[in-house]
Image (cartoon, helix red, strand yellow):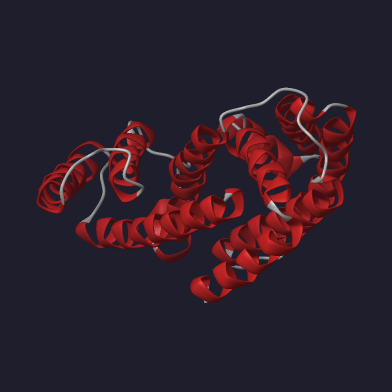
Length: 256
């Protein structure tokens, strides 16, 4: 399914050209910063409880996207504002459905799919705009994939656990030290997956096995994971690694 989606998106890149791909990539960067990096546990709680909390979240998303997209001038800022308005209604729908008891994993995936679709549609409308000043797109591409894997990926993992491991539904969303362990492990694996680290295959396999073992011990010893929960977490993480690799290649095709 992911490969089929990748082929369809590649066709869209050919239609829109590399300017649209660049616009989308920067737009996605702004989305990741606003929707994940700037969204604390407190903001996530507030937005689920009141409209004012949701508006705080939307304001942060809007600021993040406007800041990133300002390199396209006023058209980039207008695109960010339109996207933020759409973001509000998507999140409002998700909160409403979540209160009805639907599976949180499905709602999260639907939420992010709709956000990505909106980003893509706006990119096709505004994407022909030239940048006011150039940026290093290959580095932006790396940043997008790492933020996706570290932030969006870690959130998805916990959501899956909360849906399928009853003991994770109580207490704080992330356990003590969990985000730091996740970030270090994901950063190391993704750096090898997208070839940031110039290491041969044998070296990568060795580092993967050692880091996975140490990560598993850390999760069980310091974060209180059971072996069953750890297996589920690692399985979801490997799906995220695969998706990150495919998206990295897709963004690269769009820039060529």
